[in-house]
Length: 485
Ligand SMILES: NC(=O)C1=CN([C@@H]2O[C@H](COP(=O)(O)OP(=O)(O)OC[C@H]3O[C@@H](n4cnc5c(N)ncnc54)[C@H](O)[C@@H]3O)[C@@H](O)[C@H]2O)C=CC1
Ligand SMILES: O=P(O)(O)OC[C@H]1O[C@](O)(CO)[C@@H](O)[C@@H]1O
Image 1: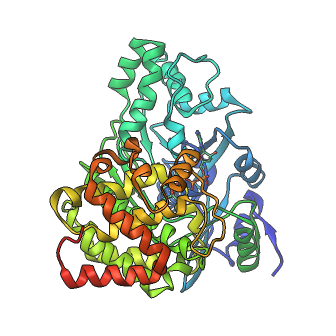
Image 2: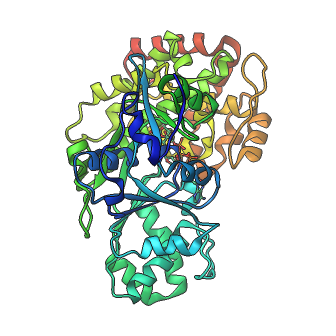
């Protein structure tokens, strides 16, 4: 197959190879600005907006903005902001070209163009995927004329809108943060207050910050992704995205300036996202962490799907979710929790999604307190089983020593790596030096029963290895059917 470079000029000619947008992209209204265009935005929110445009609603085009790295600028601008999204699983690869992005602006090159985009009266919605780091603000006044952060751009743009008598807009965080709506509000109102209290009051009254739960496993784009798109579809795309077929978006219904009618494409607009967020973070994200640490310690697997081929690990995750985590969750409206768990396991096992265990293990000091430790604390407080949760924590502690159970080195990627690794190594099989990190463990730090359980688990992992330890713990949990810790 000859290879064709993706652009406005060529896209129609690709229709016999891949699903292409047939709507008039020049007629898209730039009602959405997205800050932090990476792999996930393009596999998730941009696909939903593309669905909307394909249905004939051209009112929700997206202006992409980059704040950090020029890679996306260099990829997207030469191809007129078109990109390929491939959904892959064992049934094959289904590709589409997404056309919903009307333009891309790289803030370090053209800060004024980013402010102009945000101050455009047609903008009703600003979406964000700037990672957790993107929500920190310096805590001191910064030069409003030269913003560098997402919040800095938002505050200056909102001030321009206020002065021009324009309405505010909705700021919708799509980052995996415990309460992403509140985090976005705090990130914007903090610097706004430092700058001008009247402006902060106006933002408070004219900007909404709904919370959202977002889900679609999307590994980072690499050379293999580009090769796949070139060989499978004959398309030269500088930055395609491969993702799983599953996607989920649950959004707090708080859109004073109108919301995109995405319910047609499966988006749930709800009064409160909390139960959905708890379901996702405590089952999927905690499951990912447990899989990452236990899978890595074996020294045998590199990816999520490889580790899931081990039936002992797959069983462990199933029982962990079913027996220990799910019973602690509130009722989730409209969701069958058993089916949800079964689906999570199938998603983890998708052999076409090369989700690196090293990615799942990164930023443990952020992920474990947000995703797994809350279930452990709830289980300890209520006297429910917690042996398998404890085993995941022990696996994390073992991982922090910096080598797997065959003695091969592990690179620990974590903002607190130095401190945590020093404590893990000093403690050996004694978890107490790590548990003493109160900022991570809260009430669990002072739980002597937990320290004993973790000490045993660390010993078992070291002496018997992950598989035999898991088998033993599963038998204990399933046979006794009562609290083991
Ligand atoms: N990849 C996935 O499977 C999923 C990702 N997410 C969330 O989406 C967010 C982005 O993830 P990806 O797109 O996968 O990563 P990515 O690395 O492809 O893109 C991240 C984007 O954020 C920008 N960024 C990073 N730090 C920033 C900062 N301090 N300020 C402003 N911009 C910053 C980067 O330059 C890049 O444009 C993360 O918060 C992640 O938790 C949520 C669900 C699924
Ligand atoms: O690991 P991060 O950076 O929070 O973002 C990706 C997260 O979202 C997921 O892809 C699920 O949507 C998880 O795999 C993962 O934990």
